[in-house]
Image 1 (tube, rainbow, N blue to C red):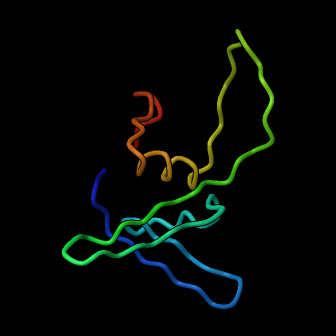
Image 2: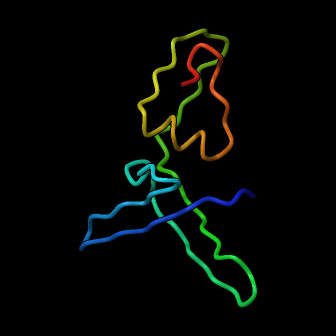
Length: 85
């Protein structure tokens, strides 16, 4: 588990979830924020799931918007060299 700076802002049904300054709220289905005495707070983020299907053995260009890329990076993903910013 890695440490990050988080901010959670809500106004009615609209909100922001900033992790290290990047708003990933559009990719989030829900979250759980918990605090225990003597420990750092813990944030569990549930990402939205796209309808599922299976396509096997096919090469494709994969297009990710900036929100998806930032969310994946925060989770430890390293983009391929040609996509690295």
